[in-house]
Length: 120
Image (tube, rainbow, N blue to C red; front, side, top):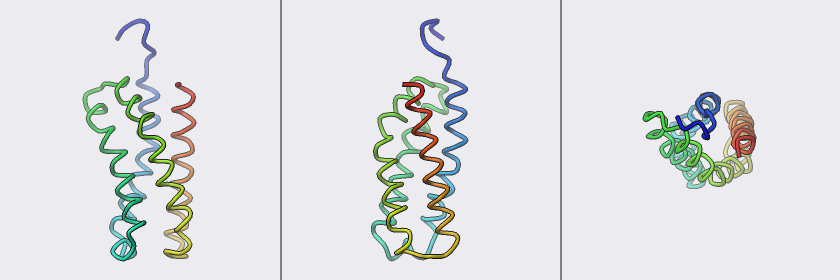
């Protein structure tokens, strides 16, 4: 590691834990019956998938600087997908599973955003 580069391994590990929640919400949405009928809901799960897909290669390579660059670059789309899901969730289903998925996604992404802004 370059002595002038910050050690991002702990930050990446924190983000990866939070993104495990995002992944589970994405899997829940993808496999729900409601997703078969709603284009916006499908757009949400695809956007969540795209965010995670962008981070996979640098995570596996241990390239923390590239991971953080991608996480920051794609953050606006992650936030937009989260906001859309929170907005449409009551129309999609009032079931507790959907309510909890919206809450989990919103909080996880809020923390992801805070960590990314903290690192700069």
